[in-house]
Image (cartoon, one colour):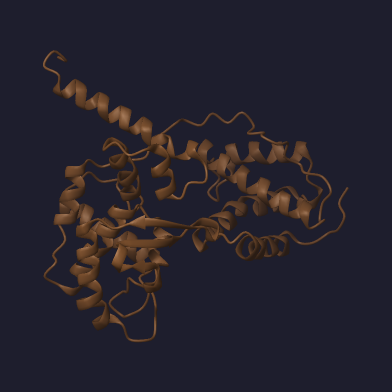
Length: 309
């Protein structure tokens, strides 16, 4: 039974405020959540359904619709994309129930609608490939020094894109070579700077940032106009050095976070330490990197053992 009636666009607007101010999600997460609800709007419009009247049968119909023609061009979404949309939908319905817009949750707990999601491992570069990317940066220019500081800090700390974008001067503790990162859900954690990362960060702050800055701004990394370097700008500069280095395509900004975790584990770091440094709330999320390490170990073994031919 529906307790109230309200246009779905209004409900999603209220949901957006909820995840922004109550759940403290990042701008990037909020954007993904709202984008993932767009097919729901189109489905309700096409079928003339009221989202507040959803039951388990309609919810299953929506999932089938996503698998058949959920995209704007009429094609289907991939199973992994649908699974993510179900997670967002579950959060949306939980919000509607909490705010008493509905009194019945139309998605059973733990239900994934038998989606077969292939298990994929994140791309990880070798240590030598990371070095090639770092060495591809021309550090004789102001922006080159900035870019070198960014990528050294990224590889040294494993920070997320949004965390790098939102990094402020107050978060850096120079005397202890560490940074206090504000992660997902406004949770803080401590990450550390290796000597080379501290060197390039200091050089950027001393020689470059003071020349770029044009207003009173606390952001660490600035664009050429003296404003906060955007997430898109960070991704663009990473892609630039992937091309210049000649390293395999497909690597992206987040790849350095994967490298950070994998290379630490390969070097003997404890899994729970890596979990803490990455800011993972669950150890199971971090454990994927142990599998990557085993895959790499197997590859090295069969390429190196004299009888592995």
